[in-house]
Image (cartoon, rainbow, N blue to C red):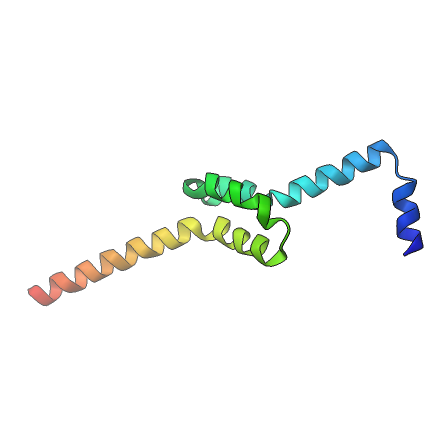
Amino acid sequence: MENILSYFENASALQWAIVGTILFAVWFLPAAVALIFNRKHFKLILVACVPAGFSVIAWSGLMIWATTGNIVDKARGKSVLASKAAAESKIK
């Protein structure tokens, strides 16, 4: 434990900047992923990143939401089309 504390005591400004940049990037990673996979919910995910960074469970949930947004919408659209087709075939 003393080794870790001594490392932080002796860290330069550049090292603090690097650690801060990496922390910021990981904290808002779900928002960056949402830009690619789930643009429709990007703003909500970006706002949710702030408190979710304090919880691994919430942050993981945001990652899942960011990556599966369009997939869920596409699957929902296909199921609606399939149910409409099934309903039309029953009518005929």
